[in-house]
Figure 1 (cartoon, helix red, strand yellow):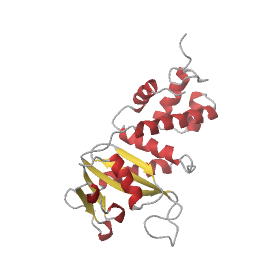
Figure 2 (tube, helix red, strand yellow):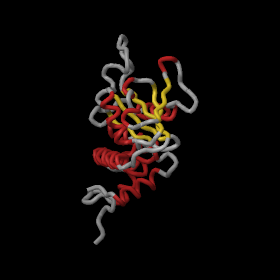
Figure 3 (cartoon, helix red, strand yellow):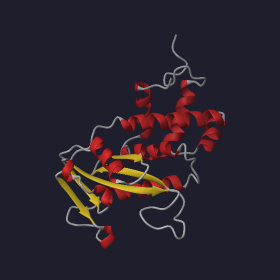
Figure 4 (cartoon, helix red, strand yellow):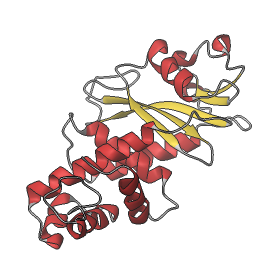
Length: 226
């Protein structure tokens, strides 16, 4: 006897219902509208869209270390800067660190701070030591040469320098813009689920040249929910 749902073991919805949710999700339609369009209970839709994002996160974490020309940068997500709060980021924001392979994929991770130990731990785990690294002048990137990254080039934004030859971080900054525009339209994300929405942005960006729906179907055939 065939399982009721080939993409979700033990699911209470059929394969077709799951496909409907996934199709609308792939079109970047919010859960409320998915429920109306599919006729599926809103709580059920919420549950499955969360599970889809969790599977996207797992897929992102399986990425191989980046090699070649790589850009690194950190960004801040949340309310606009509070008046009087200055410095690297603003109070109350979520800090995200990103690694971008030029003409390729991006990797993101929420970090507790922008100190050297936090940023460089991710770089050493996600970037091949033979890579060419481009960053801004933030002190958190000091000493990369000392840990084996001999090709580290910088642009100093504080001195109004944004390009120096081939050195710039325009690629990762383009991703930050993409993610912030996309997340802003959600009009408020709970802090406990922010990382899932961030990883969804990462996954969509990395598969921007592919058919999202068919690619997700293949992902769930290989890694069904259980």
